[in-house]
Image (tube, rainbow, N blue to C red; front, side):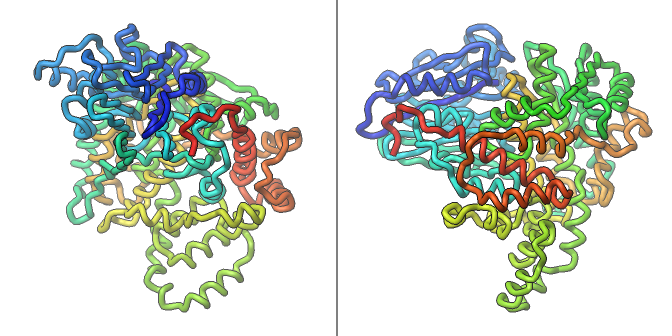
Length: 628
C-alpha cells in the first residue's frame, strides 16, 4: 500500500522537474511513511515518485519505483495483488527469475509478459503505472471496482498522475482553480464521480479502466477493460441453495487471499452481519491470533459495543474496544476534512476509526464494506422498486413537457419533494428515481445556493450521467438498484472515503466482500437466489453456519456521530475566509433547515468541505513547464 505519482514530459519539453517530483512525494508521505523513492528515465523526460507502506516483502527488494533487470520497464504501484503467489508460480514455470517476494515484482513481470492483458489475471486493489523505455509509452490502470484511486492531468506539454489530487496541485501541474462541474456534483450527490474532481484540469480515472500514453504523438488512449457482468434473470442462477454455496466458496477464497501479508491482518468488527461474516471467515481461513477492533462513542445512540463483544467472544478473537470521547470539540473534524483530499460528505467516521486502530500499531484491517450494496442492505432496495413498478417511465412521456415543467415548479421547495420532482421531470426512470433518493439537493436547490458566476459554469447533468452508466437489461428491479449502489454510491463515496481516510493514518483497509471473484459470482445470481425481498438473506444463511442466529438478528445501528452538536460548534467557531462560491443568505437558510431538522447534516457539511478544500488550492509559487 503506497502513494504513487509521476510526470512525463511530452514533445519539445525540458527534463522532468525533480523539485516537482519531490513535492509530489512529500504530499503523499502520509500514505507511505516506511520508505520513499524517486526515479527518472535515461533521457530524464519521465519521472516517478513513490512512498511505501511496507506490507508484503518488507525488505529493500520490495522498494519502488522498481525496474526490470534490463531497465526497459519501470513500475510504481499502489495496492495489493492478492493472487500474487499463484501468478508468481506461473511466471517461474515460464522461466521468469525473481529477485524478491513482493507482489510489485510479480505485477511488473506479468505486465512485461502480457501487456494490458495482465489486467485479466489480477485479483486485488490497485492503481499502477508502467513506463516502457523501448516504446516510450506509459501504461496506467485502476482495479475493477475502484478501491484504489488514480488522478491525472494531460496538457500539451506533459502528462502527470498521482494517488491524490493534492500531489498534482503541489507539483504545480495545474493552477489549482476550482472545477465547478465537480463541485456541482458534490452538492448534488454528496461526492464527486469520475472523471471529475474539484480541481480544474485534474481528472479521475474510472474504475476498471486503463490508459496508455504514446509520448511521440502525445496521444492518450483510455479504455474500460472490465464491467460488472450482471447476468439477465433468464440466464442467472435462481436456486437459493446453490447460490449460497457458490457465494460462500467465493467469499472463503476472497478472505483467504486477503490474509496474505508479512504483518498481522486485523479486522473492523461492528457486530453487524457484514463485519461479523468477514471475521468468521478470517478465523476459518487460519487467522488464529486475529485482532478485532470496535470503536464506540460511549453514551451515544447506536453504540454497538455489546453486540461486537458478543461476536468476538463467540468467534474467539483478540478483541479491542476503543471508546472515543469527542464532546463537541471540532479540532479532529477540521483535521479529518483537511485529510479528505477530494471533498465528500462521507469520511469523518472512517477517519476516526482508522486513527484509533492505527494507534494500536495495526497496519492492515479487513472491512465489511460492500455487503449492503451487493445483498439488498439499504432501504433503496425496497422503496425504488415500488416506485418503479408504477411505470412512470412509460406514462410520463405522454404528458407534454411544458405541463411537466409547470407541475415541477409547483412542487414546494422542500428538499425531498424537490429531488423527486426533478426525477419525474427527467423521465422517471429507475436510475432517476434512485438518484433522487440518494442525492442531497436538486438542481434547483444547487442553483439557488451558488453565486451567479458559479451557476453559469455548472454543466453536469447528474441524472443523465447516472443513466449513461448503462445498467444491463433483463435484471430484476432490485438488482438494477444494486448496480447503481455499486457503481455510484459505493465507488464515488464509500471506497474513495475509505482510501482517503484510512491512508491519512497509513492504515491499509482490505475489503473481501467485493473481491473480483465474489462480485462476478454474485452478478450471476438472480433475484430469487439473492433472497427475494429479504435484506441480506444470502449473507444471513452463510453467517448462520458460524454464529447462532439470535446473535445477529437485530438490525445494525451503525457508528454515528452527533452531527448536530459537532457541526453547529464548528460553524460557530469558523473564522476562515470564504471561497466566494456560495450565496451567504442561502447558506444561512441551509443551516436553519439543518437546525430545524428539515434536512440532514450532509448539505451543510458538503458546503463546509468545499470551502475548506477550495481554500487549500492556493497555487504553488512554482508552476512546472507542463502547465498549459
